[in-house]
Length: 335
Image (cartoon, rainbow, N blue to C red; front, side, top):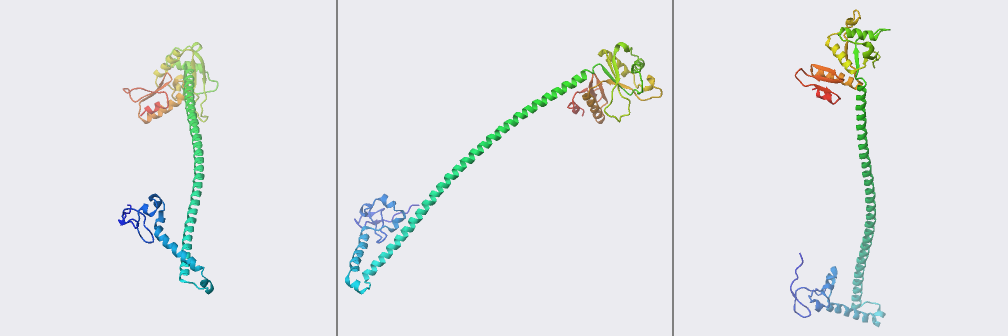
């Protein structure tokens, strides 16, 4: 809070003074106009207000100084070499003035030091600001580089996803084509294998056992055994029969399935009781789906798992809906 001025009378005009300079020597108050100083000039003194003296006190201090000068030059003082009272007063005044000068010089030195510190601080701020701007520019450049890299990564990710989709589509197309070329084929498993065997004769005996009218010379395109991937498998190699017409293949397969429990002894292999069964000639993908579907059907107590028109199907019971297993995702439906 601002300090409230104590009411006093002006030492010059004797009128009341509300706010004005106060002499540090005689403690008298003055109007600014009576003191010969403006209010603004007085305020600019700052801490110097505490040492401000009025003109009357300044004149009193100047008069002893003049008397001291006169006494200082007297012949008796110079001859005797002693000090009079006035000489001592002058010397004391000079000491006080020297002390005041030292104080002022110290303040000036302090101000000079502060100005130097401020200048150095300004220089430091300028350097720091320059370094900061440089750092910001470098950071902005790095951010731009990272953003560009992120954009490149996103583009690559999109390209990879497109390639994955293309590969998946090509894989599906290849699987469909692989199955398509097998559309007229039957795979027969469990037929005993011998050197020099006549596969046409074996298939003909199988057709006769199933009461199917097979004309081998016109109905069959080719017949062969195919190797399995497992070299340690001691079972006979499957027989692949390719028919000239798909409908002939479907009819022959249906006739085989009507006859339950066909064994090797039923088609001329004496004493061979191993079961013979036939199915569509499946692609590698569909064979895998069939194996997985059989395993899951057994685990989940599904009653039926079969292949029709080269498609794997499962069914929990006779009243439940049929699940078509055409992909590994479809296997998840067997729950």
